[in-house]
Amino acid sequence: PFDVLVIGGGPAGASAAVYAARKGIRTGIVAERFGGQVMDTMGIENFISTKYTEGPKLVASIEEHVKEYDIDVMNLQRAKRLEKNDLVTVELESGAVLKSKTVILSTGARWRNVGVPGEAEFKNKGVAYCPHCDGPLFEGKHVAVIGGGNSGIEAAIDLAGIVKHVTVLEFMPELKADAVLQERLYSLPNVTVLKNVQTKEITGTDKVNGITYVDRETNEEHHIELQGVFVQIGLVPNTDWLGEDMERTRFGEIIVDKHGATNIPGVFAAGDCTDSAYKQIIISMGSGATAALGAFDYLIRN
Ligand code: FAD
Figure (cartoon, rainbow, N blue to C red):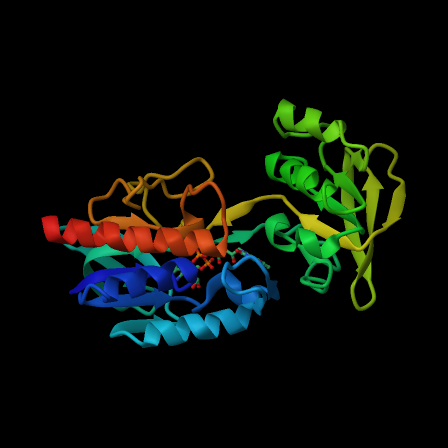
């Protein structure tokens, strides 16, 4: 069996694997797609020590680092079941069954899409999902935020400090964000809030130039000229394949302690699939390292 089997090959999983392998223990990674969300990222400016890089380039150097070690990388393999006996058993879609003394779950998350025309076409060309990452690219410009929950309103407040104007579009007649966030939002001079509206289309030529929405009360269609759209309608953790006995938040995020341990002994988790407060590359890598050291501690005690 493996000593440490990592499920997920994004920044959290890669970091966990390197930390584990450096202890000289038998380490493997199962990844549906090595690199994870980073493969879909254009410019990265907040990975400290690197002023600017691009997703695929960062993934190539992560892969190179992983290959320095004796790590069994099983790419293009999807885990479908986990069971804890004396060992942890992980079953793959391919039918393969892997056994390990400890498992680190790092299956990441995905942004929920609004699914309107233009969204996929202009991804990274004005359509963005992460204000911490892409906010500064829209300095002095007009942007929209789709979604009036906590993440949407936090994004709008954050962006209002950087961009020229922010328009918030909420489908429901009321914002769902906490009252204190709403108060803060309404105190800002460069924010417009549109409630009870449905986004119809993100328009553009080579990049975003506007958004079309329908007023759900009057059924009238409107178009706003702007340069960016931040979609903030939820981040969904890739954890639905796990069984009932894995403790998760109501959003499906795996609950971990400060060692990265889950409620199942020998099973650890890291990165965007956990209840970590913020979802970023540097944070995922840190939590991957934490989970690997947590798993190592567990191994020397059991
Ligand atoms: P992920 O990167 O999501 O990786 C998950 C891994 O698990 C993948 O390998 C996936 O294939 C695999 N997997 C999932 N399910 C299974 C399964 N059942 N079996 C096996 N493998 C599975 N962060 C920044 O810090 N800076 C940025 O500029 C930035 N820009 C971003 C731009 C975009 C468009 C997006 C989408 C995200 C951006 N982020 C950015 C966020 C950052 O990419 C994530 O926080 C980070 O990738 C999370 O790492 P992770 O390893 O936890 O998960």
